[in-house]
Length: 190
Length: 190
DNA sequence: GATTTTAATTTAGTCAAGCTAAAATTTATT
DNA sequence: AATAAATTTTAGCTTGACTAAATTAAAATC
Image 1 (tube, rainbow over the protein chains, first blue to last red):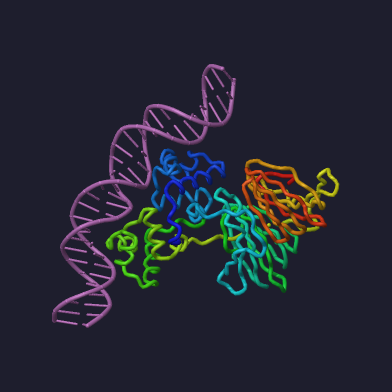
Image 2: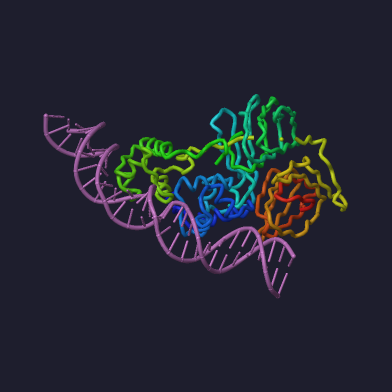
């Protein structure tokens, strides 16, 4: 949080929650049931009349399949276009592995795109969780494990699957891999 | 946020706050004054005995010069196949314009990916509809109109926006454009 | 268009949690 | 050991987090 930017108001946060809920096509009743709160309260939260406790807020974010950061960064200016040379790069804390976030994403977004670079031989962790992912391999080669299937991926290949199935991939090329990902969840690592 | 991972407890959050405070060499008194809360309360928050309200929590994060995400210790999760030479091609009924569907898509999918090829000079129809779209420009150059803004897109550039805003694009390169699209709706043209 | 159903908002509350002030204890400094 | 600083504990207030139920608005159905 920066001094220059005050904390978002209850109203701003509430509107972000509503936008997100509608983007997912969920009703107040659905969110209320999933969060174990009441319809009336969610309605008031969305209109900034009430503020949820921290734990309720985290539950709301989870049920809306988004991050708290997304719900709180309401005043971040949205820019739809990301030039190739203006991508924001982040190290993944491991040697030779980094990712490029593609834009801040707008508040109701269902897509979380990013470009990930991995060094040769890198093996990602086995993952399994609710959601969906799409990957377009820009360069390098991957061995992609999905359930009990194994796929060889070369540049131009794509894969799109439900993430509730166990999956991981390994960079099998001698060069680093460059992977364009679009996920239904915020993500910083693969 | 993730099914696999419950929200952090008050204790976990509190310990994260204390670690951060000590890392900065601040006393409880300093943090209490800066946040306009009492020493006793900060102490209880740090030991998980009390939880701050959302607004107090944001103030604490700001005073500790950190982000809420950091204090919540949220980890991001990780994550499939269409071979480049196995893409299903479809003519768009117009000279030189065609698209490649990327995989059949699984039931329940939110993403509809495809690759679109357009000839030089092609101008897509103005579109406006509920949903979301992400585009990665593989080759060629586009002039992308979004609302009253115009963007120049070159290979590697990406754009991600809500489709309720009017949008269309024009191929401005001398070569055909190759565009990777991920949309929240099935699409055959852009 | 009328009616029914669904979704959202409003109202009127409860009660405990967010937070206080002050006392007590612990830790650090001299 | 004495003092100052830092932290914890205690006892309590009050208001906001949240409820249940009624009402209204919007969407769906006939």
